[in-house]
Length: 295
Image 1 (cartoon, helix red, strand yellow):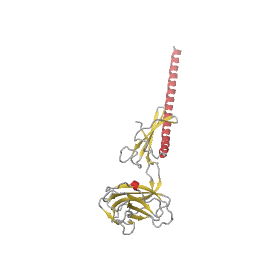
Image 2 (cartoon, helix red, strand yellow):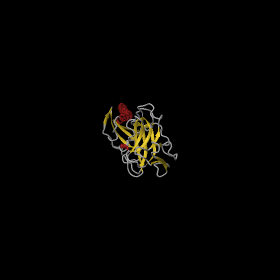
Image 3 (cartoon, one colour):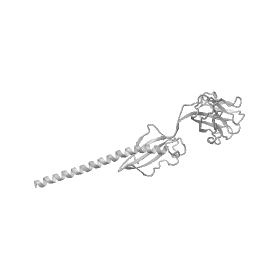
Image 4 (tube, one colour):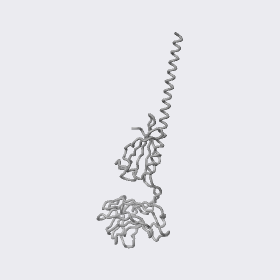
């Protein structure tokens, strides 16, 4: 009987040990899967960022919050989605090319699932403002002047500015191409790209504006009518780009200039801007990485 009792005890101990080994193995396997899933999720963020950065139409190819189909990734599977982070919260990725978005990846390895995300910003990196008195808040037009002496009257006005206290009113214009201008000689670099922007409105009826840089030999400027269709009597924001291409190292003039495409009716401008484009394309927002919970 004693021998049988000892044998039973030994058997129980052996069985318990076997169970413990199996539990330890499963725990180790689960931990390994979890670690691998996390590593793959972090790698997937870089892979998908590169994929999106190489696709100029990535916004049109994705729908807010919609998961992609599963695809293999090493020993696991990957799916991802993009979330619209616009201030308007309209859940539309394609309505504004400068809206931020959050890239969320979900990786499964075995029974382990890990999610990670980063915010993406497609706004360009810009240099400092080049124009002086760009918001007209000094209360006078200087250093904006008439394109040619005595061809247009420039007055600051407190009548419904786009922002702040003042806007610039261009009136008594002798021709369509006469308008406010600012001398930028010595402040721009040949061959560089500049972002030109501003808020504009017409005084009486819709018209198109030319907004840009002018200089002898400067190609295709100023021409932004494709960006300013039918500007009416309400403020309209305009943004465009100019690649500076000078044919002479020391031009007679190099100006920021605003005029109408046709007609001589007065117009208003506010918050105008000329800034060099330092870098472009999709960028990861610094400090935006985080781990997510599965739904």
